[in-house]
Length: 402
Image 1 (spheres, rainbow, N blue to C red):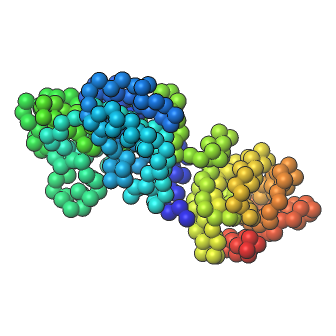
Image 2 (cartoon, rainbow, N blue to C red; image 1 turned 135 degrees about the vertical axis):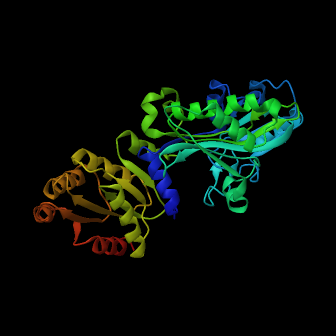
């Protein structure tokens, strides 16, 4: 079963939460904001040949382009010293299943790899800009020790974490950037380069409506240059209308059913169980999943048809749910507030007539005109199992799918 944290993150993503970029996409933004990155040889996808890109200088670093941290430990980051090694690594990496500490025990198929010229690392630093939800401002989070999990570092060595709040209107002030540089022990001859980098990083964060822009590690090379060796960029999904370049990027986190649901305005996340859920409201949907679990069942999906669910939305929701072969029964849990229960019931009846529903359907209605709604379901001539409460509905759904 998908964990509640993972489910919540995916819900936020699907309902206007965030858009995650893979490393090379984040580095494209870095380049746009004059943040130095390694020389890129190219990006290869499954089916591409290494001859498609030009590698003038070895060694190179070959990195799996997946939305998960900990790639290096899982075999998703390799160094090639010559063309033969590069060919072998790329061949083995493309199509491999990568499992890291962030994938909840499941694998992610590697469909793209990034090839960068290798850098001679002298020192690693961590730096990011994120939102301080409590203070409602962006904040720089940094450490003079980079290349490792910032969560682990914050737990083991909290004294090494540097924080600097930023005014959205004024941007990062020069004295703030210099102060962060001093606290990170940036060499004096690189301080101006660092100030430009961190100022541009904040500018990117604000102008692209990001929730996180992270470099881990930011390196100082043996040639005394500062380079963003990696990138992690997460954009607020609600702002994509302002950023057509980001909106045009591939949706890598959603399944085909999730993409289809998103196109027609339904918030849907596929899960591992066999009880399909149709609910109006995200909070009620989360509560429904919990209650199904308590009743001894497993939900097949999270599906929120929204507060103004109509016949078309309910019909589309039935279609989406039934495309999942795991579904052995459906639980409809609707609260009639904005839309009254009698209208919702009419929508359920019409939708059931328009869709070949070949599994048992349990319906729990509550709210305005609930009596009228139940009568409509009762007199419809269709085989609905009605429930008096959420708990009653979940128990009935679990029993029917056994």
